[in-house]
Image (tube, rainbow, N blue to C red; front, top):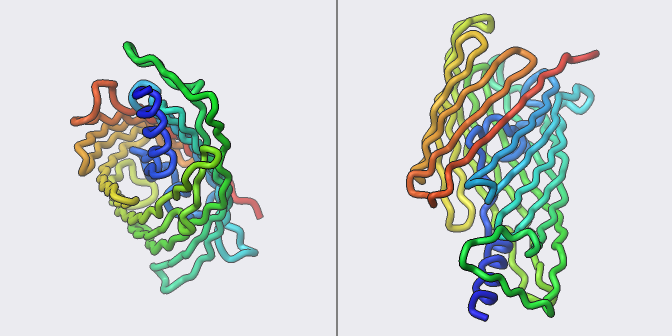
Length: 290
């Protein structure tokens, strides 16, 4: 009985007070943190990402498409991501973003953005990963119903050709979550995000470029800060990163004007002995028509 109660309490706590998944290559998931990045570049962009942390204990998939629409004087985008936890928790999101663009001067632009989407949170104890020596005993009289919610995020980005800075609030409406029928109602905490970055490149045709990108986000009692340094020589990308939670990241990738592929491995200095986090990202850039 003790095992059953502990398991149930742990899963419900994760489901109703969990922090969002993080990405090591946060620049490769443009709409995940801030909807104001919709249409941030002239070319239509498709972004895909998959993260596998702690030997599959946590898996996150991401997909988005965004482009500039001149008739709307801004950018539009669609986004979907799914976050799976070995504790039997699954959270799915699908939504759309709009970010109008305003020119402040010849070199500076600003873009506010909003995203509205559908979020489903569910528990499935049949997917629990076995732990040696632990016998799961789930009370079959308890029923679990997925929680369906409206989820709203908003943000703003200021940018020049080489510099950008943005601020966003995810889960503005703090969606209410109830998974156990008749159980307590929890909420998805708001997340506050700050991003900035600077690129060093002589010309657009230069063989070499480097960039520094930083992100800070706070959700409930969780605070996270990460810095990434990326270097490109012709078609080869390489980078390193670190966070305030003793996570150290190495990155390698391929670069062209129409395709960018990246792989990263995150090592958790103080994490469990379950390996780190593998992450693969793909970004495709298409021609602009019309």
